[in-house]
Image (cartoon, rainbow, N blue to C red; front, side, top):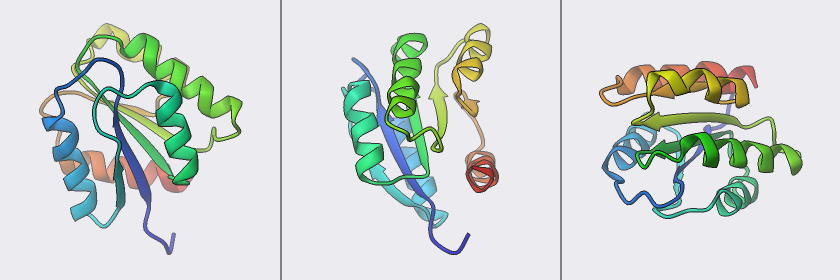
Length: 132
């Protein structure tokens, strides 16, 4: 891929804890990605719209508020409904181990919990975005 990958980092729902999302956004930027950060308190509709308008390759969702099994699938369905199902969707934050398989079944490509290695997130994103 000759162009920079574009990644949108978002916080869905009533989740104001954005330190991790900002760390990941900075890691993406430092690795040469173009990064769009939507800020906190985003609705799935707004994130889907921003992802489509910004023509991103990757949507990285940070979730610490426990609504990941509702909000992330809503986002994925909105992207699919608008023909943007070629975007790689990643999830990170405090997501219980028992919820990961449900998110993967909905179309999330990877789930990264607290303490995940930033280089691993970057590597995973590059490999899987190129495959899309």
